[in-house]
Length: 469
Figure 1 (tube, helix red, strand yellow):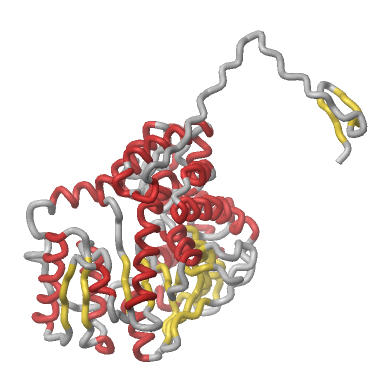
Figure 2 (figure 1 turned 30 degrees about the horizontal axis):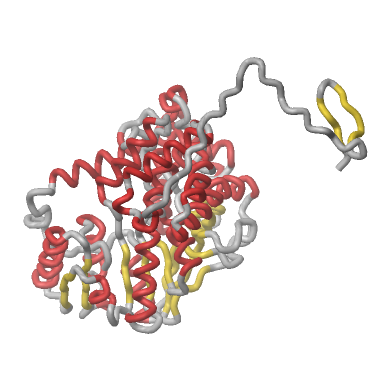
């Protein structure tokens, strides 16, 4: 488990695995760069085994290769640069008018998080190819999910799947809105991480979409999720991401004060500026001096909604498990590019991971996904090649940033972020973002007269030249 200093995630996933009888006797190798947190998690893992009478072992190391050696599964939950880097991801773009709520998946914050994370993920994958057991699988939880998984697919051949809980939590929300048990809802999803669309929703053969559409015309439902509700009303399909997240992935809701006040006025993750950074800083400061797990109950009752333990169980036992996985698109969604990262139904069993063919998304849904995919492709390329120009282009293609900033402002912002985050970007050593200063145009400046080939000219009307193609 790489990134085992994660107080919430590592504890949850370990508890889930220990709660599965089929995985009894598992050996947990914990690795992190932060010694105090790592030792706390090691002690808590041992306490969970002991107090619940579960066979197995937990040990920790600062040496990643030692942990990966002979592993069957490698669970990744890293955040390179921690809260200090995250602060720059949020605060520097805010100076340029790019107001982020979460800042971990797209936008300047998500792209720079990917720059820091992708080279480490690739190194982990190469360690797996060299010293893990043959066929070892990476279960990848680190954000930005789509750009990370896209880059892994380009750089390595390690079996990997990206995991998120957006579908599970949204399905729970839909079940409560429609007042039907979520276990009785049949659904099909397809799209990209944090922009996965419920293509069908049924309860015992009844289409739930007419009811859901009716509900989101009511103020009391719409107020809950203004951004997701507004996209639903205009694009026709419900999406897996809540208002705070989704407001960052599209150009309409955070580009100015009026839009923020109208659509992102709910507190915290309902759209508040810097909500996720503020929460992370609060937790980091709170637990800097003492062990948050010291008095945490170690009893294991039931598994969480996270997919990890169920996937491990399916691969160990051969009993298939269906989940939503983030994988490299190999024709699974036909109107999104091959090689990008898509989130599609996936089966796990003793033969490995098996993504399912979805086909075409509704064209408006595919179009909205593409606005994010374009930036993800460029961000992955920038990270894999430590390319400053590709970095600027990735941020320039981000829908929210492009709605707020000029290209020159984007270049200046990226330059400032790169200089501030250099300690976590070793691949960019000695590289700079070349400024493109404003070109001063004197009042008496006339445009250069460029001679036109007469053979191309058809006519000129109202100062517009018409040429033959």
